[in-house]
Amino acid sequence: MNIHEYQAKELLAKYGIGIPTGHAAQTVEEAVAGAEKLPGPLYVVKAQIHAGGRGKGKFTELGADAKGGVRLAKSIDDVRKDAGEMLGNTLVTIQTGDAGKQVNRLYVTDGVDIEAEYYLSMLVDRKSGRVAMIVSTEGGMDIETVAHDTPERITTITIDPAQGFQPHHGRAVAFALKLTGDLNKQAAKLASQLYTAFMDLDCAMLEINPLVETKDGKLLVLDTKMSFDSNALYRHPDVEKLRDETEEDPMEVEASKYDLAYIKLDGDIGCMVNGAGLAMATMDIIKLNGMFPANFLDVGGGASKEKVTAAFKIILSDPAVKGILVNIFGGIMKCDIIAEGIVAAAKEVNLSVPLVVRLEGTNVAEGKAILANSGLPIVSADNLGDAAEKIVAQVKQAA
Ligand code: ADP
Ligand code: MG
Image (cartoon, rainbow, N blue to C red; front, side):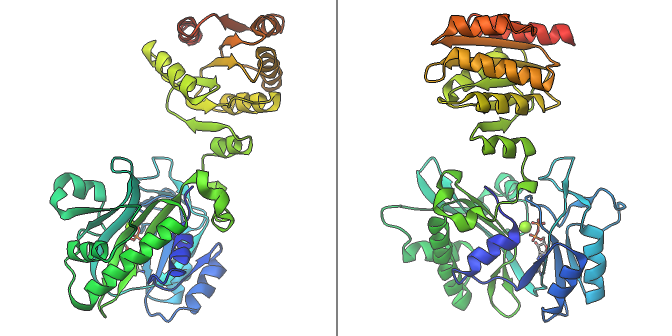
């Protein structure tokens, strides 16, 4: 789960980490009121969307000359003008895709006199099985570009979970940032605070870009992105409350209500499968037959008829879906129950694309009979290969 910059900064501030003061706003009036609480004379109005690259982003509705999603404002009047331009409009950045994201929230924050910009991120490194800190002197830039062009400017420090964060890790971070004197001490302390926050909150990723050194010698988190391990969210009800569903894929939000594992993909064939392994195999065999899956959807082992119906509706509500392949092994969930769910959902949503169903397992004969007697144009398949061939053929025929 991702959260907004202002929410992440509020969390980090609780760990003693330095951030510029700021206030979130959902209206122009709130933005102005937020700015009035700041000392000035420089304010920064920042679009709050779950994507980076806002500074260099473009607003679709405003002209090509309009400023991006991070704006320096020299007066309260400018804050009012910028907030008015940004709220409700669509910001396109390198991370949003062409459709962009509508800006519904702003963060009005203190303008900072920047001496230097750095990069610091943390993630769970699967290779080493440890939390890694990735540090670079090249802050404020796209880190993928830095990694590609000048990999020697990136330092990775991993932390042994059994030992935890040690003073030498902090020194290594400060050294990688080439900081001396008091700034060196601040960097070491910051690294330790970040590690504590990361572990405490069960983060999956925490990126600070840029981390800045101010003209008066302070290290501040100027921009941050934070994401959390969804499987650990039950331990953090306060973090869970920060979820902003308007930033998420509406179909994925709907799926999570029914506890379905759903991920939207780019292809044409919607898949409904039980078990992640079977889902992977189904996606592979669709590709093997020359088409691509439109989604990953695991309805789980013990899914009810309601769950199957919800899953089916989610797949059908995706306009990219040109055909559906249902591949279910009826173990805990029996084939006749699944068949009833499919028929009910197909009738409810007015099935407009080809549907191939492969059922196997408990009560398979009853399940197949329900499909056959439904009066719906459902094609039954006998095995995985047969199912994939049939759906691809059906979709090509319908095109
Ligand atoms: P994004 O990464 O989405 O473009 P950032 O918050 O990193 O957004 O802002 C982009 C750039 O804008 C920063 O690299 C920094 O140079 C400048 N900036 C952001 N916030 C402030 C601030 N509070 N004071 C001064 N400059 C800022
Ligand atoms: Mg940034």
